[in-house]
Length: 516
Image (cartoon, rainbow, N blue to C red; front, side, top):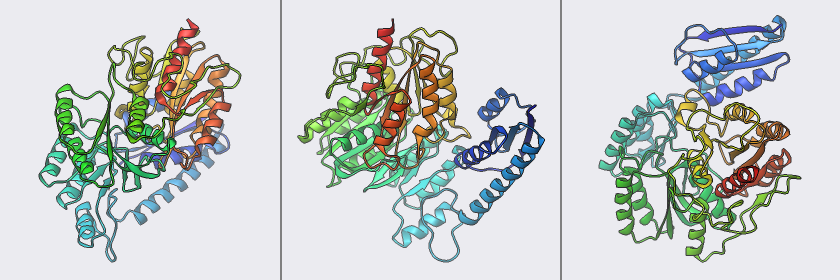
């Protein structure tokens, strides 16, 4: 009979990635069936409750511990190891963090600074700090980012769950001081070859990217890399920058910065569907630049990211390659034969985007995950970690149920799904036989060091019960996970794998159409 242990440690905070690693380590112990070690957010409490734990009262700033094992002896051993891991984590945090509170600015010799502003001013004065990176829980990001701005530094805000009103205040103040704010929720940037956040290993080159999309930028820069073309800089601006509330403040500054950069010969602007009035302002600004700009603003009837990348290559006089794909074993899947073709449609990527609104079709959803039920109805189930990749796939496929597990609703108190696959794996178990599951797997620094190892068992299980699985694999040749090794592992599990998300979505839609 299983034995449970539930504890709450009031006011104890650790970041979600560290707690995810602790949970995995405890789960791997002999006799442990379930281990939830996470901040007591509503989402995490809901997960623990669904697992059958009887939970006491706890606030979002408290640490939740829920263990289940095969007996009291195993539970006692697991609790002791958990205490050791958390003690080590606390020691490392207190010993190594000083007072920099998630700031990317460095320390000088002597007493470490106790605030971001002090660290930034010291770094600017020493001539060694040119950018601050803020990665703290969303409710605390505003103060740290404003400190950096007031000290004269541009700032990348990796944190999500930052209120839009605070984003506007930060960007307006930065504009007054002539500074760039990347974010909030800026997951990817490359500054002069140095990757920040979720970043791929890329060759240097002439293309500058401005992106209100982390995974969208990664898709384009990885396809460019596959074609032998490098990037000068990738400036993320946060997913809400082209909304009506924010008005494109960082996009306009980033475009101007790349236009003034002698190493940038062509600019690519990437975004999910922008607010129409903001798009008009941005297009007017683009028209005033001396550097040519290719826009990849997703929407019905517009080019997808693969088609936009091909436009960039043609503008540079570079041949468009055959985008890599790895067919599912033993299925006879007809994968694309060359550039510009979406599997299952025979159309060019741009022409393949339907003219319906995003989310139209068979019950598209932004927050419910794959549905229960069997047998399947030939429905396409998008189980995504990247918001822009999810939006692009929905547009290309034209119908289906799509969930972006990287949305703020799923990341409060949890690691991003590009690091922690657990929510997506759970969703994959609910895809019924006869349906098609479409996933993205994004490689690079900060992402899961071996995503195929975590996803392959779930993919194999889905395939075994009659689910067709298609994977969009976004990565570069030199990423630490190994593009080829990841593709082969996912393929061996039974998935059809594509380097192009648009082609993956087109292929998945073709499989659904063929099943009806």
